[in-house]
Length: 124
Image (spheres, rainbow, N blue to C red):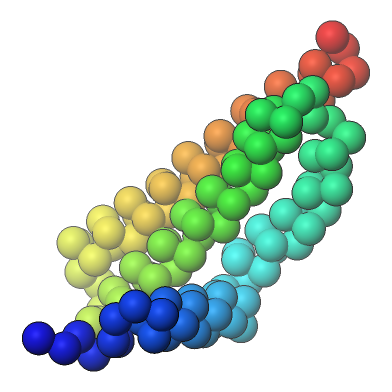
């Protein structure tokens, strides 16, 4: 059975193309994604200064990517929900709230780990 996206390298290139389209859509349509991307651009250079080890540096960077990941998933869920209906619906509202909670948790983790890095660097 042939899959519509092909197999092997063809599938990888098609998947990469879809990923790029997704990043463009997030950047164009989602102001929160643009804000978090701007924050990432500011904090990546700071991570080189704050990190106490390679693993610590990886954790700082990972929290930034995790926030972007959560925002993309939340945005995808919201776009799908809005496609289904723009009217108030309890389950769609719950799904949107759950997506928002995922972003909140990702940002909370970022704040926790970056606060530890700042504390270790300047008070430790």
